[in-house]
Image (cartoon, rainbow, N blue to C red):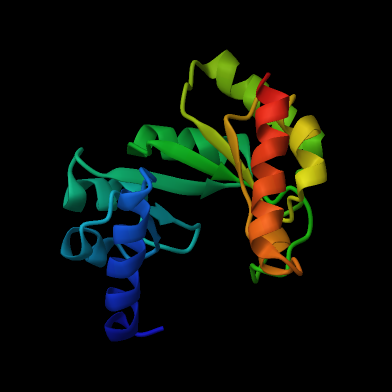
Length: 173
């Protein structure tokens, strides 16, 4: 979408997020973060480097980066990322040029390497995740999950989201 299309939708999404106490992270568009008042930006592997975004935004904004390997995680940590979006967990149709699938063992391995290296950034699993995956994924040591496809494909998205939240609450207790 063009910047002109993104701005009004992003402002509306930001207002909704803030109304409900959610953090609003815009994808890819570092140049829009301050303009729309986003809380931060998430940068994919082919987007602006995290270090450059940090120079532009300073330390008052959240910057996340996409990773597929521990080397990606280390690079993002050194560049000043606040969190890591790590994946994909499995094949997903929401991304083109997909990196190698990690599965639960891939996450376990990356989390272990992070601990050994003293990297304490939140790590969020992403890519092809369903509510059935949540319990096993959370056992890998990741901090959280991001999912969209299972909600967007659901016959009743609101009910699907409620079930996902319930699954997370059960797992946490």
